[in-house]
Length: 149
Image (cartoon, rainbow, N blue to C red):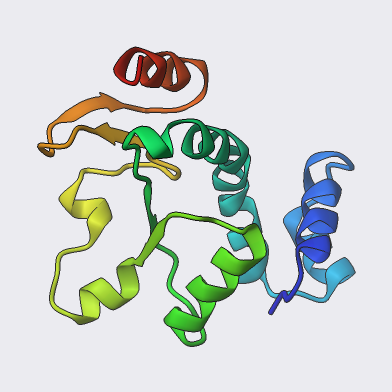
């Protein structure tokens, strides 16, 4: 199991820059295919973090809250996995583990909210009404500027 982001970065660089196959990445980095798949799937989420941090810092004092849902099942303790991720990324917002939520009898967030891809970002107002789906990048920043003017 990967323990540091330097390894993740090296694997992603090999896959996306050097264009090696996932099979070759398994051999080169001595990782199983499932781990390589996890690295590939988490890349889009990692790319969204800087924009989310910027929005949080800019609008949190005005009322913006961010809630992230960690949907990957952990081979280890889900609480420790999420806690480690939050500490590593220095995320100041709430992270919910879908795995623990399902164990408590709640529906899977992805199913409940109709998520079809990762990351799925939804902007919701104080009353719980969805304001924007696919909330990311420039359109999200513009909408937040409009809301918090």
